[in-house]
Amino acid sequence: MTILWIIERLLVKPIEGSNPDVVITADWRCNGTQDQYSGTCYGSCSFQPPSGEFTPYPDLTQEQVLNWCYANGVDQAAIEANVTQQINDQINPPVVTLPLPWVPVPPPVKVAEPVVIADAPSA
Image (cartoon, rainbow, N blue to C red):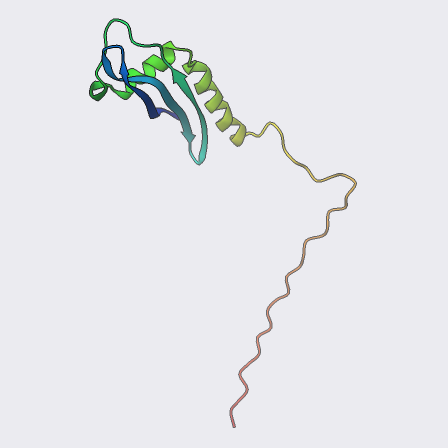
Protein backbone atom coordinates (compact mmCIF):
# COMPACT_ATOMS: atom_id res chain seq x y z
CA MET A 1 0.00 0.00 0.00
CA THR A 2 1.19 3.50 -0.82
CA ILE A 3 0.29 6.46 1.42
CA LEU A 4 0.93 10.00 0.17
CA TRP A 5 0.38 13.24 2.08
CA ILE A 6 0.01 16.51 0.18
CA ILE A 7 -0.69 20.13 0.99
CA GLU A 8 -3.36 21.33 -1.42
CA ARG A 9 -3.69 24.99 -0.41
CA LEU A 10 -2.28 27.55 2.00
CA LEU A 11 -4.22 30.50 3.36
CA VAL A 12 -1.90 33.42 4.02
CA LYS A 13 -2.14 36.75 5.86
CA PRO A 14 -0.27 39.38 3.84
CA ILE A 15 1.11 40.89 7.08
CA GLU A 16 1.18 39.42 10.58
CA GLY A 17 3.13 41.61 13.00
CA SER A 18 6.32 42.39 11.11
CA ASN A 19 6.23 39.21 9.00
CA PRO A 20 4.96 39.17 5.42
CA ASP A 21 2.92 36.29 3.90
CA VAL A 22 2.24 34.31 7.07
CA VAL A 23 0.53 30.92 6.65
CA ILE A 24 -2.53 30.73 8.88
CA THR A 25 -4.22 27.59 7.46
CA ALA A 26 -3.11 24.58 5.44
CA ASP A 27 -5.50 22.29 3.55
CA TRP A 28 -4.08 18.77 3.52
CA ARG A 29 -4.96 15.43 1.94
CA CYS A 30 -3.83 11.89 2.67
CA ASN A 31 -4.23 9.48 -0.26
CA GLY A 32 -3.73 5.74 -0.18
CA THR A 33 -3.61 3.24 -3.05
CA GLN A 34 -3.24 -0.50 -3.37
CA ASP A 35 -3.74 -2.10 -6.76
CA GLN A 36 -7.05 -0.70 -8.11
CA TYR A 37 -8.29 0.39 -4.65
CA SER A 38 -7.94 3.84 -3.11
CA GLY A 39 -8.87 5.83 -0.02
CA THR A 40 -8.53 9.44 1.05
CA CYS A 41 -8.93 11.78 4.00
CA TYR A 42 -8.65 15.54 3.90
CA GLY A 43 -8.91 18.49 6.20
CA SER A 44 -7.58 21.86 7.26
CA CYS A 45 -5.24 22.89 10.01
CA SER A 46 -4.93 26.41 11.41
CA PHE A 47 -1.85 27.87 13.03
CA GLN A 48 -1.12 30.49 15.66
CA PRO A 49 0.93 33.52 14.60
CA PRO A 50 4.62 32.62 14.43
CA SER A 51 6.81 33.15 17.45
CA GLY A 52 10.54 32.76 17.28
CA GLU A 53 11.96 31.43 14.02
CA PHE A 54 10.11 32.52 10.88
CA THR A 55 10.50 30.87 7.47
CA PRO A 56 9.76 33.22 4.55
CA TYR A 57 6.90 31.98 2.37
CA PRO A 58 9.07 31.27 -0.72
CA ASP A 59 11.34 29.06 1.42
CA LEU A 60 8.59 26.81 2.84
CA THR A 61 8.54 23.14 1.92
CA GLN A 62 5.59 20.77 1.85
CA GLU A 63 7.32 18.60 4.48
CA GLN A 64 7.70 21.60 6.81
CA VAL A 65 4.01 22.55 6.50
CA LEU A 66 2.92 18.91 7.00
CA ASN A 67 5.02 18.81 10.18
CA TRP A 68 3.21 21.94 11.39
CA CYS A 69 -0.08 20.12 10.77
CA TYR A 70 1.05 17.06 12.73
CA ALA A 71 2.21 19.33 15.58
CA ASN A 72 -1.14 21.16 15.61
CA GLY A 73 -3.63 18.35 15.98
CA VAL A 74 -3.57 16.37 12.73
CA ASP A 75 -3.18 12.75 13.92
CA GLN A 76 -1.01 11.26 11.18
CA ALA A 77 -1.23 7.67 12.44
CA ALA A 78 -5.03 7.76 12.88
CA ILE A 79 -5.60 9.28 9.44
CA GLU A 80 -3.30 6.76 7.75
CA ALA A 81 -5.17 3.98 9.61
CA ASN A 82 -8.48 5.40 8.31
CA VAL A 83 -7.22 5.46 4.71
CA THR A 84 -5.88 1.91 5.11
CA GLN A 85 -9.25 0.76 6.48
CA GLN A 86 -11.07 2.36 3.53
CA ILE A 87 -8.93 0.28 1.17
CA ASN A 88 -9.28 -2.91 3.23
CA ASP A 89 -13.07 -2.45 3.28
CA GLN A 90 -13.07 -2.32 -0.53
CA ILE A 91 -10.99 -5.50 -0.73
CA ASN A 92 -13.09 -7.33 1.92
CA PRO A 93 -16.40 -5.45 2.32
CA PRO A 94 -17.68 -5.59 5.92
CA VAL A 95 -21.28 -5.19 4.68
CA VAL A 96 -22.79 -6.59 1.49
CA THR A 97 -26.23 -6.48 -0.15
CA LEU A 98 -27.88 -9.85 -0.72
CA PRO A 99 -31.10 -10.51 -2.64
CA LEU A 100 -34.20 -10.54 -0.45
CA PRO A 101 -34.88 -14.17 0.53
CA TRP A 102 -38.63 -13.94 -0.12
CA VAL A 103 -38.30 -12.52 -3.62
CA PRO A 104 -37.77 -15.25 -6.21
CA VAL A 105 -34.70 -14.80 -8.30
CA PRO A 106 -35.73 -14.78 -11.96
CA PRO A 107 -34.10 -17.45 -14.08
CA PRO A 108 -31.35 -16.27 -16.38
CA VAL A 109 -32.52 -15.03 -19.76
CA LYS A 110 -31.53 -17.40 -22.51
CA VAL A 111 -30.17 -15.56 -25.51
CA ALA A 112 -31.37 -17.02 -28.79
CA GLU A 113 -28.79 -18.03 -31.32
CA PRO A 114 -28.67 -15.62 -34.27
CA VAL A 115 -30.37 -16.85 -37.42
CA VAL A 116 -28.24 -16.60 -40.53
CA ILE A 117 -30.14 -16.15 -43.76
CA ALA A 118 -28.20 -17.04 -46.87
CA ASP A 119 -28.14 -14.45 -49.58
CA ALA A 120 -30.81 -15.19 -52.14
CA PRO A 121 -29.43 -15.69 -55.65
CA SER A 122 -29.95 -12.67 -57.83
CA ALA A 123 -31.96 -13.12 -60.99
